[in-house]
Length: 465
Image 1 (cartoon, rainbow, N blue to C red):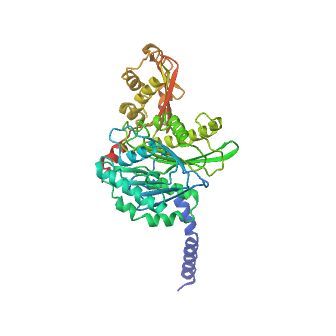
Image 2 (cartoon, helix red, strand yellow):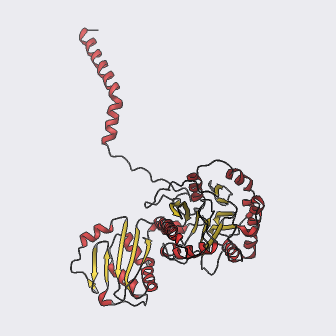
Image 3 (cartoon, helix red, strand yellow):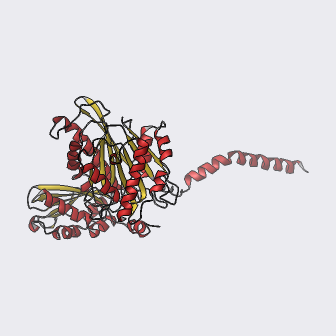
């Protein structure tokens, strides 16, 4: 071989070696400059096939709350692998109050809790809460009531308390009888887990996931306050994304505080805040058979016992409780089935608070309004429709409508400063405010809702599959 050929071969070999050495760098640069496919949307931890809501918020950090332990287990109410049984164990002397659905076909667990909390001495020493997902145990007659009673009986034996001191809640398909044997079979495992060392936030987050049905993220909230100088903690979880409309409580919600409060007082403050939180959200205008909100007070904080509704020491606690409940209520809307917009609707200038609430709810529940929001269309004509159909007092010639800061209508007609470009840009936001002044008085009310998308139909079209 000639020297020229040898040197040529050697040059190519060196060139090849250099290219090989720099190949990882070249590939990296090439990957960085080429358009990348979008990252897959994370799957929801509840029902398979659902994507996490784009409006989801992270689960909060929750420190220890004395007097309560929580755990979850898989009882098998769902075919797929997931925990569907959640159990709270409370210290002796824990008090409880509840607010429940007004639905005419209440579920067996709703009947159970209401009966025992309303009985003389009810709510004075509640020791457990048992929640199952996947079966509502509603519209199941005497058999459903018997299954609820047997569940409470089995848990009471394990925890050394009376049946009446065990609260129950169920969520899932209506018309399916609860197989209480599945719960009983898991109670030994539940006891073992309750006695293990699991960080509080993990306990609460697992419980949030355990009660989910078509929810796409677990919902939790936490707040701290003081009672007479003692630090008091409040934590809660909720579930709900469909069959949600104001009629108490639009969902399942469980709140625990380490304050020491009599059941009568708990009932009063819970009822007070339900009106402006859980009863002021709507996803689809439908109320569930199983809606339940339970508030527990363990007394472990060391704060003095509050036994009177008018006690001034409740002021800060009441505000903190309202904060937790409103946060949970907003998360229900953020997880509305198929939702892509979080919407605040405020009605001003109404003749009474009740009238303002009815008007706001009419707007929030209107499929035409909600689909317009989904289409990012500031269709104020549909809002006029939703207001007028209520038969509430409305001054047509003084009606005004705003989308965020942008005025759509004023003095009963389209605004002379209406700007379609600005309005369209505003409607692309994920959080939207609509304000309507009906010109009939001074009362106001706010309702939170979401848009109505194709996703809602897809989720509910195969709910039982």
